[in-house]
Image (cartoon, rainbow, N blue to C red; front, side, top):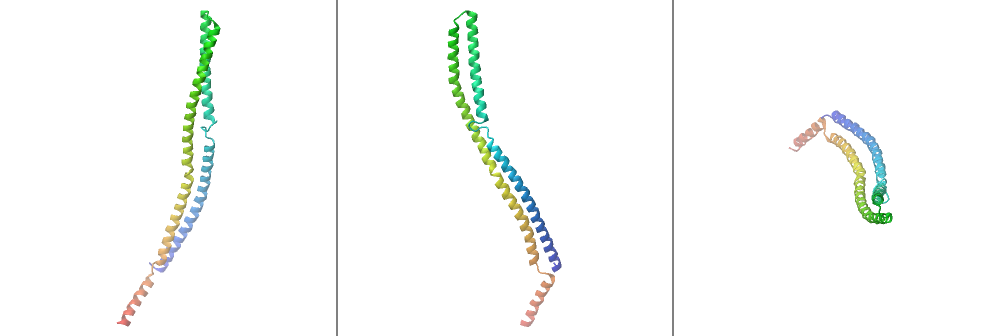
Length: 187
């Protein structure tokens, strides 16, 4: 390879290195924006956890269970009162029985609420696990960007370095001539 060809190779590699650098900077800035958006969305996802104590899931479960318990007691009370009315029985007895059913439903309700709370706690742990796993992603993305940028730049620098180390035809010929001259003088 002639010195001119080595210079051309060096210049091409230098130009490519500058291009890799510019592309890496643009990609890095774009990726930083994307990572920032990801982190922002992740923060919003974490803060909107419906399974947190007092969150939407707990409110909905409590309301559903309370409504079910109340509807069951009201239905039983209406049925008992209707039966007492049809058969001519004492309405006070029907009301007392309905009250006992309502109390029983309330006792059952507390157990159901405890089960719903245990379910909510497990769901909250799973939700938080998703947040925790996802929070590592920005660091992975940033490390990947850095690695890709460095690899491209180092590849171009390696070509530049090798181009500078390769002796030209004239340098090779000169070295051989010096070697031959040394042998003639010494021999």
